[in-house]
Length: 367
Image (cartoon, rainbow, N blue to C red):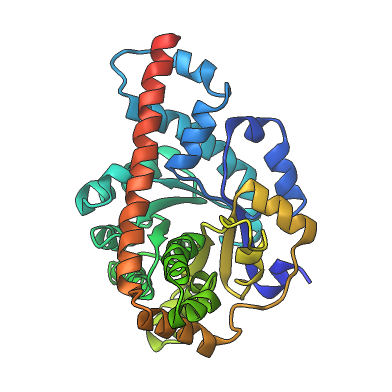
């Protein structure tokens, strides 16, 4: 049984210029291995700093009046356009269901609604592909930008979601955007969005706190040991329950009748960080209809080799709720963990972006 038969699309969480032009990505699409691409500042930082793929373009962008950020966006937009063109037949074939390629706004704007929206619209116009998605961090400041971007007809990948509460706020932002668009007499048909829930980072953070309790010994240690590796999958399953509730709501059904698409949950950060865990657990345990899972190269290779497919997202919802009740009893606060994860996620992408800009500046000097 294939993922697609169960209603899940596998996207590729990686992009590099070489694979766009040597037939590698084209082959992956043709074989049905991937149905979209996501990128982020870390991915581009690794692609540009760890390869010679961009040297020629960096030389041609040697104009000293160009700032490193503008050089980055020129390089990234070339890659995103090339990827979007490779996925265009799939996008057309699925009538806008799949075939999307994501490019993120500058992470330095994560707490600035207005600047985020301005840049999202600018990137949308510059890339000029209907199967582009603009990644907007789902910070509190990002939410109004998501609404306004959707209302303007810009496809949005709302990223860096960790909590169920924030996920519901993202869905609200999306639905409001569709409603604003409808009230303005504009079509809803090809406006698409995904809500990117970051998965494995939650286990990494909570497991480290559980390990401290285990190391202390005593009665709480056994309880903590039982909870290792449980939080991330439980969180995603509860998010999926919320998604199904929203998809069946009168509000969304009314928009759907006008051509509105459902905003699919997208599972991101799905590589296994802990070598003690199965290397495809964040794919196998999160399979369900109407979802996307974006995987890095090593996770894709592992899943194609030995991944097992079953409809797993709705398994043991009561158990998922119990995981967080037990964590709270141990003094591990869900709200505190998810707030910290969001802050750390924004900082991580901002740091990678600034490292990338510095590398571009140095590369340009060297050339």
